[in-house]
Length: 308
Ligand SMILES: Cc1cc2nc3c(=O)[nH]c(=O)nc-3n(C[C@H](O)[C@H](O)[C@H](O)COP(=O)(O)OP(=O)(O)OC[C@H]3O[C@@H](n4cnc5c(N)ncnc54)[C@H](O)[C@@H]3O)c2cc1C
Image (cartoon, rainbow, N blue to C red; front, side):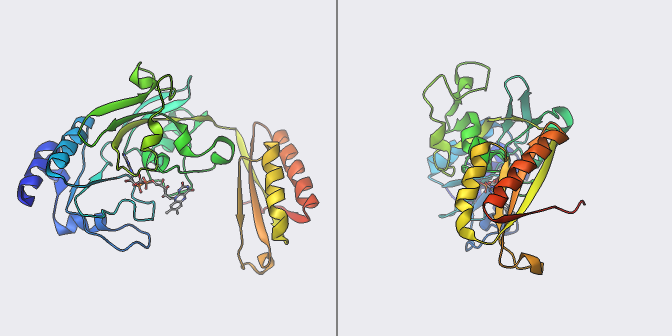
């Protein structure tokens, strides 16, 4: 089938405004903000429903056209740039937060829901809960991040975000739609069981095995208070043991290490930022004391962070 007919079929599925093969529209879909060399896409399509995703997959399967699904497109490693042309399926229009279950602590979202969107929604409607999101711009999607084993500030304690998926709805290359996890046998999206766990097949396979249309992601209790405990370490060889000791205690929510030459007093040091959380000032103070002691033992300096 020629390009014109394929575009017409895509337009029939999603509507004229949401399928294109114009060079202007395709420009941003042929590259990402990373260092990968641009590679051209032939079509971009923006589905709104799982049924539309199914119809696009059936068309692509019939015509043997490659498909690359795209969330925020911010993985910076060429993952959403087509290798052999074809269709980029931009998931942005599938942006509904379908359910937040406080009791079982999960959010059921469509594949285009962004981390900023879910965070803002929870802050407003479920302020006691927090989502597992990366330290990336808020336009990245919950799906795109979890599906690459992404990580964030909760990962030190709870694991990578792929492990936090409770259930998936996914369209396979032949257009069949499947549910995986407890949602396959009930209306509840709270666990990967009780059936065999096929969810891993769709994590870090970069959309090659199917397009995820919905996913359930675990949510976590949000502590009342947070703070950081800053340290400077001269000898990098003590760091592995120091970090291991800190993570052994369950004091840290997250840990960040870095090196920078400016301001001058940071030159020659590794800085350590330990993120701590708690329900009271007293809890934060106790955690700070424990960390100060550990820094001292590792011949590192605790530094008070100036109040902003
Ligand atoms: C400043 C900055 C900071 C960052 N910090 C972090 C961080 O702290 N932790 C971290 O993990 N990452 C980080 N990243 C990397 C990246 O931005 C994130 O991992 C991001 O969450 C990826 O989500 P995305 O929506 O951009 O995914 P995309 O790039 O759109 O997609 C990622 C992969 O998933 C596939 N995919 C997307 N949607 C679907 C779908 N519906 N079905 C099937 N496959 C799909 C894509 O084809 C691609 O292979 C950072 C990036 C930047 C620019």
